[in-house]
Length: 145
Length: 329
Image 1 (tube, each protein chain N blue to C red):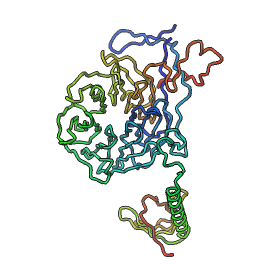
Image 2: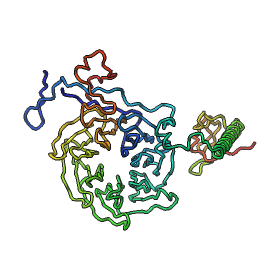
Image 3: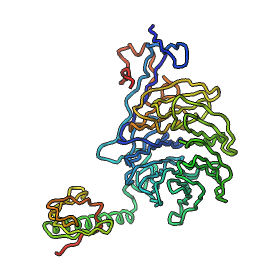
Image 4: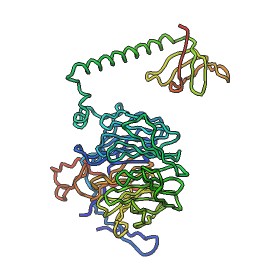
């Protein structure tokens, strides 16, 4: 048996616990988050038991309402993407938060539309040859078709 | 044979974990929600720490998080001036409640129909979740930011702790302060145990226990370091506390003696809570991790497995993972 002596701050000696203690074994480590998903597995027993309406519905009316909404969403998304394509190379006016309004030549957006790449951005400090605008700061864009 | 505690580390957060809460015991076990400065509160299976999902939507640090008893709803309080209510099964955002300042605390009533919020605008608000568009009831009185607000006494009263170094007990209907406690230091945490009506408060190095109805002091215990959070075991035989020195302390509630202390976190501990069955407690730290600790070290529970000496040396041992000796920071 091995002991370690540790001197307590106040007074006296205290034996630390013996070194032949065994750490408790574990079956595995807790599972961490998946990198590309927010989780809430729809195939888990709890999800299936508590959210029956998210399963493909047996009733046709609610099914077709979901399909219609999906179709409309897809259409709006396509329109948005086509607008971005049409905007390329054009001089665009960006209305942003804090009453900021700037003009620039639109280049491209990133895949998640988080940033907009622009050229010749006209700012009160002068014209920026190249710039990135943060999409969440942009309220509206307008341009001549 | 003496067993050494093996904490289970739950990673995933990228910033300090500032609050955590357990649900009640449901047919699917119990669950744990963690509030983090990275703005992404997470839901985990309570007994294993397995990640279930992340509630995405807040645009600032999340300061408070809670689950209802059945773990079907979650609520979060954030620095983006909103409190949000979530479906804890699908992860969908159900409601956003705009506030005028950082929201620090959220708490459901037992029936999950009302949500109490409190934050830096010093006002307690009660939202009827059945009528979310209706204006909340407001209770004003605190002179500084509210840190924690809890329902108590069968949801008829409210306990609130604020940076004005007071804890106040309010009547929900009259909105008047029924009782008040003043301290020399800011209260760092508050926990309410309905069964037995006990209030656990921490301030400075002290863990104090009060009767929730009367705010009469039961006892105080002083720890070796500044304590940020403490939790009383459901059977009221011990309590755990953690704070600035990165350690978890376990005390005998009756004798007030320190039983154990555990190292493991790499930063100050911000929150600690016992699970609803008392078999484990969870701690959240500045180091961005949650750790689960066994109440009865060595017992088979969740991911911990009691391994007898013969099994350890046996070739047929089914234990997959034996933690290496930890290098203590």
